[in-house]
Length: 236
Image (cartoon, rainbow, N blue to C red):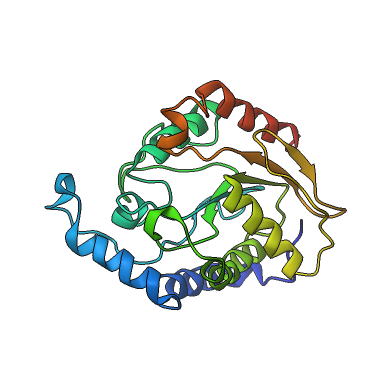
């Protein structure tokens, strides 16, 4: 998948402007109220820590051919730390897997300045604010998708999209359809692989690495490792 014409020399400024617009967004009153309430009240374990409490930009290799799409920031994870999948159980599970697969320089992700670097991979989400009960409304996702569209444009050529969970899967397909691509019907399932169309990336679907999935055994370490091995096949 190749983005439209981009002035590569001007990319740093464009990325900076995009991140500022994401962080400043207040389009969804319900989400604004919730993320700020969580940041004020805090969890007891983090009562002495200042929460980010704003929309969360994407993170990673800005030239990476792999786009990982999540659901939304965790209320006490990315909504606290300001970086996708950082500071909660989902992130612990994800970054250990990425480290083992060679996409991350370290297995841990605890805060913005922890030294984490991603290789060949950019992580984003269909919703940038922590939603109540981890369930964003369809109109809230629609409000957020233009941010992901702009990230894709700036990244350039993307070979693989990894959708973590059904909401990320459906949201990614929605965005491609909004961009005019004729995407057929695809059913979500773990480790399912889809060729979305000529000049479009492959789609790899995975269960979300939430604690609800990992602690119940619905998503195991071996199952998750399979996802990143599938991704490598499309980067050769």
